[in-house]
Length: 245
Image (cartoon, rainbow, N blue to C red):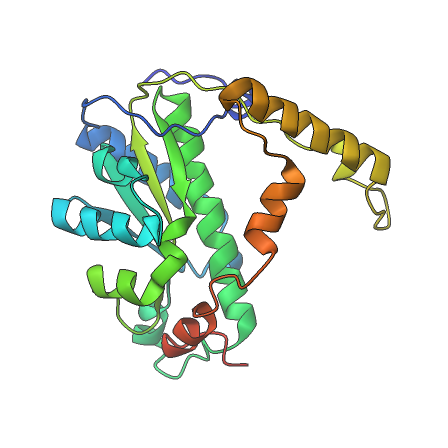
């Protein structure tokens, strides 16, 4: 398999939401999963499982969760070549140590961090091999329903989905915060307010040019954090055995 250089792949990342009908070979999919498995894992716990969703009905139901109260959208959940769900999984630990204390919040954090690292490894490898993809955090709109669709047992939490396939679109790259606004030295330094305002204008210009949208980064933050943020999640986590203390 011929892959692009890591640096080039990372710097060229774009979320892809439209795919051709070309399937991903079993060999290539296995390679992507193996690359994901080689990601760092805290204390060698290997506490992540991946659910590959090929059933069309299940994908349609997952899409309904992702859309939430909106209409349409998220067609890529159904149309991508592969849809993967990365899950925190303590069932193997409970097999070997039935009294394993998975209820500590730290155990949840370990799983969430490991899931993100593994999923990014998979996507980065996929992009280096000519595939495209997009993360699907909106499956957390209703984790109880996702757990029902995917028949998830106690000790398992679906964290994030991923659409993969061969790209059928050319998309622009959304701006990222300047390095000076995310990295400080030796102690935390709050981001410069003038620089933040300047970045907000950059994002607003980007959306105007790309989609003629009157949308800024400030408005995106308000839209996402201006009210309740999936308030049912804590109860679900606790039902699955996590975040009890």
